[in-house]
Image (tube, rainbow, N blue to C red; front, side, top):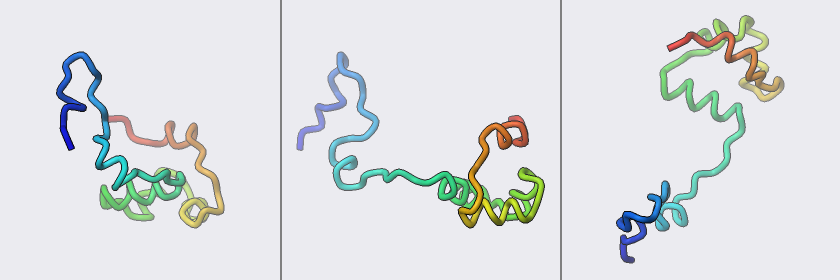
Length: 81
């Protein structure tokens, strides 16, 4: 397969080359899966999540899919970088 899909300076570079996009698609994730993935990638624990959310029960409910993620609440609770 030619790789000229990203070598033409007049064409925008595609974020996902055709092979990867076809053979290794990035699947949609639920908000809970994203939270769990971010926690795993950063070695965060449930205690860290409790510190952001404010309660063990709410953190457990969120991780078990029983509570929806409130982005406004998370944005105000997250430490600024």
